[in-house]
Image (cartoon, rainbow, N blue to C red; front, top):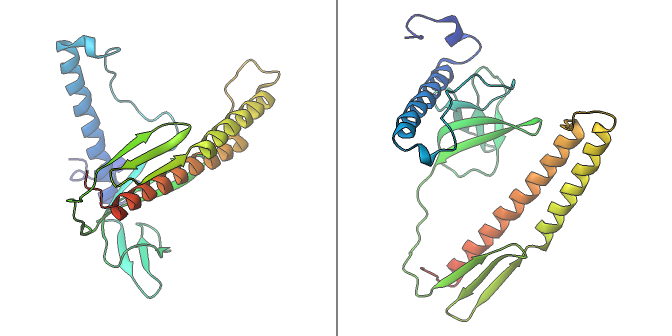
Length: 227
């Protein structure tokens, strides 16, 4: 309806498909809210309180979803390049496979920066799950993960580096919050230094999780663990 009537709010500053996607997301949010209300009336004990109606975003930044009709992947001599709507300059990627199918692009606010997330569809990797061995994985804190296989092999991923980084982060954050809020009644602190600190910490933890999970998968494939 907004597109047919050429509503000014629908066409202001956004590509048509992206604007349509945002309207669809809003409709989905309201449908989920109404479904939650119906469930709340039947079983209020499942909820901490009455579900609230979706509202306008409180902050100036929000996540934007761009469909594959507005964003396009191209292949050239350098690699894969991404063409975003309303932008002349392309973004180049050297680590994508030869023939990915772009489904959508998300642009998310991320500690004072923006995170570009690409959803790609690729052919399934051929893997035989009928391995002859069984392994057990125990996740923890002191040891990030411990693996034992019935072929008498094992592996331990120590969590000391992550725990040390967590302690360092909280000490540094408490230090800067104390400096910023000194002499003020408000104890909520926001600064570029704190955003950069959180950005560094989040990236470190995410990097460790990805590397360890990749290593666990390689271990299971190497030892032919099917279960």
